[in-house]
Every structure is written in C-alpha cells, then in structure tokens.
Length: 313
Image (cartoon, rainbow, N blue to C red; front, top):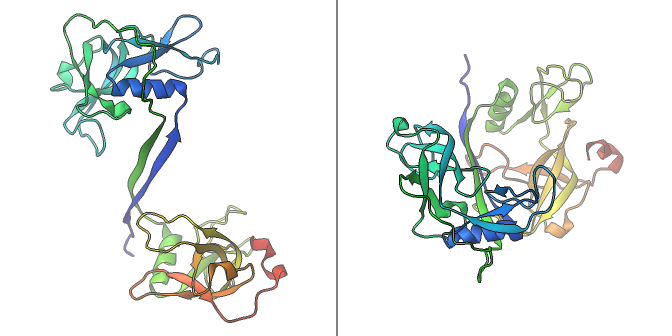
C-alpha cells in the first residue's frame, strides 16, 4: 500500500478593520475598565453593543454603562485550552448577562473545575493588567459572591478613542491529499507535472482533483503535461509578503502548461516585471532539492497566438 502523504499546514494573516462609533466606544471603554452597552428604542440594553437593532434594524447610538458583575446564563467546560485562548489552564466558556444588560457576553470563567460552575452563578470581570482597547482587556470572569457593582453612568465619550483593531487569524491543521493529488506531488518530486484526463469531455486538469469539475465524473487517466507553457494572464505584486523572500515588484501569473486544459499559478522571473505579457512562452526553473518549480522564465520561443489560449483565461 502506498504511503499516505500528510503535512502540517498553517493559514495565518492579520485582519485589520476600522471601527464605527459604537464599537470604538465599547473597546475604548474596556481599556478604561468600563463596560458599555447600547440601548434600543424599546429600552433593551445590548452587550456587547451593536450598531443596528437585530430585531428592528434601527440604527443605535445611545450608549449606556453596565456593571462588571453579572450572572452566568449557560456554560461549557474547556478541558484542554488551545493556543491563543484566554487562559492556559482548564476553564469554562460562559455567557454572562451583566447587571443592567438584557443580552449575554461570551467570555472565559476562571474556575477550579466543572463542579464549581453552574447556571445562575454570580461572576465579576477580572481586568487584564495591561489593556489596549480589545475584548482581551477582560482577562476573564471570576466567581463573585458580593453585592452587585453599580455602573458609573459613563456616556461613552473618551479623550483618546480606539479607532481600529488588528485581529490575528490562524488555522492549524494537517493536510492529507487524496489519490490524484498524491500522484501529482510525487511526480513533482521527479520534476514532472502530471494531470488527469476526464473520460467524458477529454479535458486534462492540472493539478488533478480526482474528478472533472465540469462533468462531475471520476478521473483516473494520468497525463504528463508541460514542462513549458503560456502566460494567459498575470498581475504585478507590489506589496511584500511576510516570510516570503522575494523583492517587489514581481509578477504572478496563470500559466497554461502544454497539454493542460486548466491554467495553474506561478511566479515569473528572469525578465523585468514590465515586460511580462499575455502569450509569453515560459519554462520552469527548479532549485536544488525543491519539490516544485521555484518560478517560470521566458523559454525563448515566439509568443503564443491568442486563439490558442483564450479559452484558458
């Protein structure tokens, strides 16, 4: 039985967004140890606040302070915290309706075990020592058996407002290709490019997926394509990517390898970026010990006629 291929894969990027007046006030308030909600036209107080009433769609701007104490409405125990979660020891995820609010806020509860958590228990905000204007300014909730805290009546106006946030997004998983992609990867290790032909429409797809995306039937016939191909379309990249040691500007292109009916992606090198063009004939450049072409360079052939690749744009 052939070895099953697998590899760890991480998808990570920073998500940057600006804030409207309601979210700006809410996050600024957390930085200042103030929890703000927003009041609806029918008198409900929503925490966390939103800019539009989820029931009536009315625009909401009436900010009101609520207490940092509240009641657990429901919960779930987290036996094994993951990277980036609020606590590094087992904790409970809880929905807490803060005193003065009509909706619940999701956060972590620091408790010694699941037996110490119950619906209806009283809790209080534990503030982070260092706060920057993010939901993590609430370090977690903790059990509380004292009197309810009284809100201070803050109206949501601060001297130095938080106007934007950067939220890191990351997905860690183990990827295992199927039969078709495993064959494709193994061929690349031999510096060959292999696709699969659809038995119905006879098109050759690279990289193969094990089924024809047009006809929906399984594909098994392997076809070697390339190594040369044609640039069908391209873009000029002017923003340097983190952890990618390529100087900008550079060109990333769709390349239709000879014999393939689907263009794949590849970087174009060996030519000034402003001389890359549709129809340019290119060939792969391999680096020592690489498992895929590092980039494609001009093959020294005349440009392909538009009619030969227009269906692959």
